[in-house]
Length: 276
Ligand code: AMP
Ligand code: MN
Ligand code: MN
Ligand code: MN
Image 1 (tube, rainbow, N blue to C red):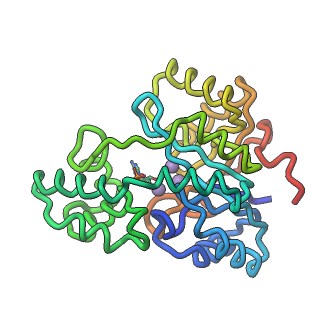
Image 2 (cartoon, helix red, strand yellow; image 1 turned 60 degrees about the vertical axis):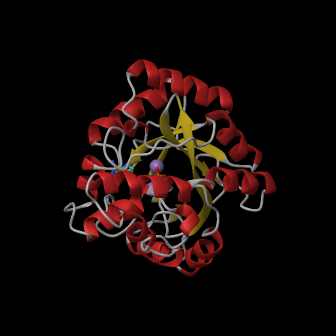
């Protein structure tokens, strides 16, 4: 079966509404699909209905932003109960502060010679409270400051570059606990993206496991084939399950549904015990 367990709609920083994301996934051959918006559950009802109409199995998901040793780390929660009151309340707290941060990002960009970034980014955000770096990147492309999203995240919006404003997200163990308390499984998203040393990655994995983390995202649009092999081997060595997801955000914005290799059959998939 074709599993894609990581992607975004315009409820967070994706470009398309949940139903359109569902249609796109189905057309690309996805059979079991999770919507995992950042710190938001608001798209799940629409996504679930659209998935049903497309005859795809649907998995309720979320991607929680975490600050770990000064780095931003993402934890995907799969098969969470979207009505879980503690999860709902916790995510509302994690989301807080994005608008204020965006104002500071815009001031920073202004000093670097890029005017109008706050309003420009907000025009791309369906929900102001979810304003993200992605929306700023879309504005930078639209304004002709950069040629594409890749360049936006190379020249701006990342540590050391204009438009990056550090932010305090959730605590790692808290995020894993919220997911588990809501009946879900916690997956360390795109581990290859964090630029951690081998030692720091080992410490992260240890902390993640101690908190109740179950799986590593091995196959993701953020990983090279070399990184897929590397994190597959790490999952095996540390006895984590493995997950697969495109991290689709929008057309021509990185990985597409259906573009990723399958999970290595030697790995234990995060979905092994799911009744589908
Ligand atoms: P934020 O939650 O506002 O910090 O925005 C983070 C989002 O920016 C991520 O979820 C990605 O969608 C996007 N992002 C971060 N780094 C990159 C990158 N290097 N290339 C493309 N997108 C990125
Ligand atoms: Mn994103
Ligand atoms: Mn992520
Ligand atoms: Mn993501």
